View 1 (cartoon, rainbow, N blue to C red):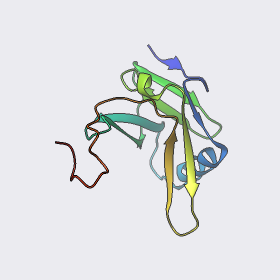
View 2 (cartoon, rainbow, N blue to C red; view 1 turned 180 degrees about the horizontal axis):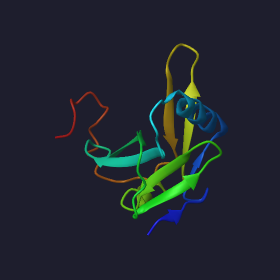
View 3 (cartoon, one colour; view 1 turned 90 degrees about the vertical axis):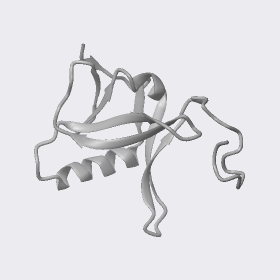
View 4 (cartoon, rainbow, N blue to C red; view 1 turned 120 degrees about the vertical axis):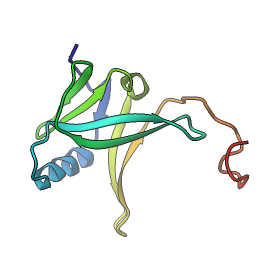
Length: 120
């Protein structure tokens, strides 16, 4: 069943809201919102991403923002509760959305990032 999300479920900083609204004005096709999704893999266990979508499913939660909607399916939502999406522009051409306050999802191997070449 479609559910309204609250800021306790997922929030966006003002820079993220501003950039997202700007991106929505640049898209020519009809879109319903931006879908935040989780994919398994890697040492962190789960990776997160975002994409434009033209559909909202019955099992989706929706966070209504001023100019757009953030859509999260019920399988991804538990991994995102309490997460804040921010937009960081370092001024050197490196600008990106970042996910703050991600819960620890396990899956780790302890050797990643130590120059060991990945998980053993």
